[in-house]
Amino acid sequence: MSEATLPLQKAIVCLIDGDAAVLAMVPRGLLDPVPQGTTGLYMRPTGWQELEEGSDDADAVRVTFEIQCYAPPPTRDDLATLAGMVKRVLHKARPVVDGFSEVEILHRGTQYFDEPDGLSRRAVCRFEALADEA
Image (cartoon, rainbow, N blue to C red):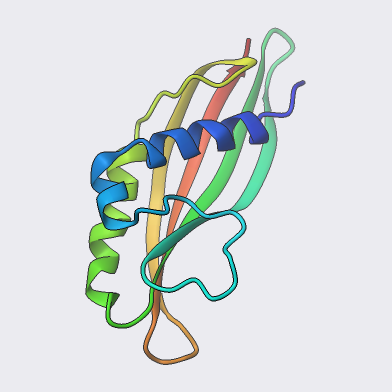
């Protein structure tokens, strides 16, 4: 079984950073790692977990991950818009991923949090990718 996480990460960065509407709102695209002192809206991929699936006849993999969107003041009101854009770009996407076929990404939910500073907010967009090994 091949490791799917790294090639899937590359495909996700291409999808999100290739979307004009997302880049208009967050010109830096996905940040990994996030530079110290980052201000304004930003996104980062987190929570990668790979689970083997399949049978004796076929190898498959399920990868769960999150795209976390951060909105410090005064950009808080833009957070739901950004989370919706991330969902639009990734939900039901079928990216080309080296070493895998039949890849599909599915949105599994978004949760909003107030940050400890009491001013900033974070949206955690959860996804699952299913892939067959090529």
